[in-house]
Image (cartoon, rainbow over all chains, first blue to last red):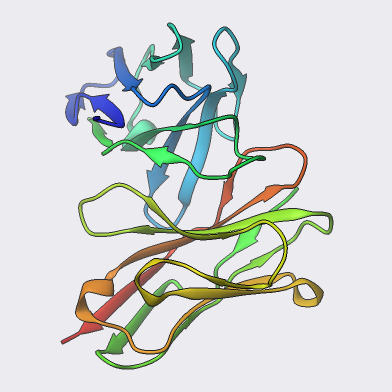
Length: 115
Length: 113
């Protein structure tokens, strides 16, 4: 039982390049999330998907797009990377949104550097 | 907008010292409260949570937190820290009937052996 799996773990991009971060969970969770973590800023929600087929913006969605491919997978795409998007990205999932059980299960993180 | 404040950015303690990390939130309605921990190089994991009932919540590894509604606070405590408690600690809040987790900016705890 792998939990939440993210790929890649590390990536270096040049400004203007595009890339997709992949996330998959095997816990049959309905809700999935993408956060970014920056020093002194904590975790900020980029996008979330409350259930398969829905996606919504979080606190910092600009410059990102997401796709909930199926119940297991939730990808995050940077269409034209900028240095301000240098960060550690975490995917997370929860059973049915955080209002019921509250617990998020996190992936190991993807460290992205944009030069 | 709802916010979560963690007052200490970095706390340095010696082993066996007592720990208290502050957390305050700004929302006045029903809230669910959480502490997450991130050990060096690892992902976040849940330490403890409060939904309702006894305001003193016990979590894993000897941690506890007390919800004080009148102070909008949910401080994390441990009577005697260990070197292995070195980590970053995040307080988080979600509103009772909706909403996603709002995280504080985190407090780094360094425990000297």
